[in-house]
Amino acid sequence: MKGKRFKNNWIYFLLLFAVISAIVALNTSDFFYKSGSAGVGILIILILNFRKTKQPNDTWMIMGAFLFSIAGDWFMSNKLGDSMMFSKGIALFFLAHLGYLGFALVNGKIKWRFTLIVLIAYLLFYYLLLVPSIDDKILLYAALIYLLISCFTFGTSIGIKGDTAFKWTYIFGIFLIVFSDTIIALTEFLGYSKLDFMILPTYYLAHISITFSLIRRENLQGK
Image 1 (cartoon, helix red, strand yellow):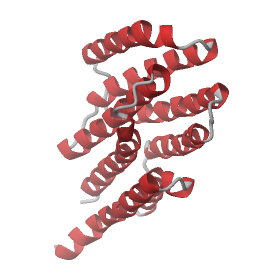
Image 2 (image 1 turned 30 degrees about the horizontal axis):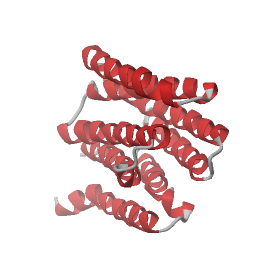
Image 3 (image 1 turned 60 degrees about the horizontal axis):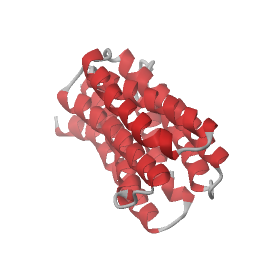
Image 4 (image 1 turned 90 degrees about the vertical axis):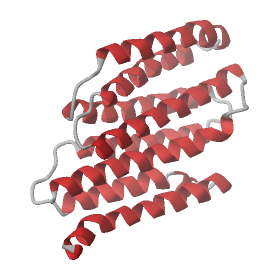
């Protein structure tokens, strides 16, 4: 029994590499470590898929989301005031959200009432605060489209079904992504920088939380 439990649970320890990478990234500007939380997540998902006799049909969505997140983070890290680089980063993060959204839909359904509440709140945030602050039309439209997909991703995550730990660590991960993006908007467009120290920690923790949720689900299915 102990041997089987270890066989199922040892992979949780790989998350330590994601944590270490995140800590190093917070203290350096090395992009290798900045991509570590998502990169380790991809590695863990590949291991989970490899050890299953029946290949899952949904985890590739999360792998794609992590890959697009890494690419989007590269553009954000190298934008140097270039609004087009920022817009390209938003586009890649939009694709990442499609992966998170697709995974949640395969494993549940959207919670429309919750989504509507979140959507109204963020649309007010957009029209009252962001529109007056963004002069670049392309960036303004990109921000709106990204805001919409973020709200739908969050609302869909709430409707995910499964074990409590799997469900709520996934929801927590999506919440952290939305929270981190909100702080980015406050910092980049409104000049409010008091919370910018939370952008990267929440972003890295989101990847770790989502990866944890997938390990939890696969281990339960393997019992």
